Amino acid sequence: MNMRSMLAAGLLACLPSVGFAADPILAVGFVVKDAITAKVSAVDAKSRTVTLVGPKGNWLVVKASPEMQNFPQIKVGDTVAAAMEQITEISVVHANDGTPVPVDVKTLDTAPAGARPGMIVTDRREIAATITAIAADTRTVTLQGPAGNSVDIKVPGDQDGFKKLSVGDHVIFRQITVAGIADIGK
Image 1 (tube, rainbow, N blue to C red):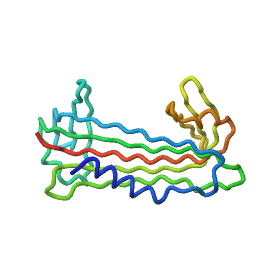
Image 2: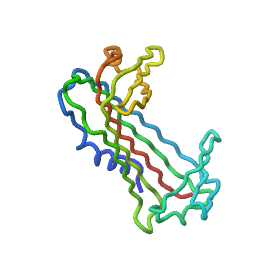
Image 3: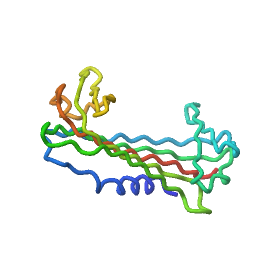
Image 4: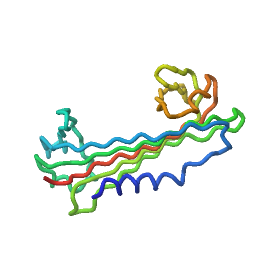
């Protein structure tokens, strides 16, 4: 299972649903990517967990869902590749443009039976929010959603639009996260 193909498929599945309800006044968008190769140091078949050790000695325990049908193939000493790609967009809109219905869609795709173990998880979120705080020193924007919940979003330094955002702006926040893990063997 090719990690790049898995991530591309997950992103393409979500992109047609990304669109504006109204023309934005300003849009700030960015992509964050991360990838790592790790070794399997332990496998617990009963709890369906795998302990991964990264190149710097850091470790992570991952629980495989029942949908991951090739779990029994994972062995101590195997190498796994994990990757994550996250697309974030903050679009300033007029307050009277209406409020979209919040969206939170998650999908899970696994490798076919008999193939090397692997899975890809896609999470797409969209909400209307208001900017309640901006920290210029850390380039962090605090968004408050319709239910009163808040989230801090760190905007990369190459986004000029960050300087144009203001407390009180009405925004549409969209985020697509695609994460995959694939066992690439010994």
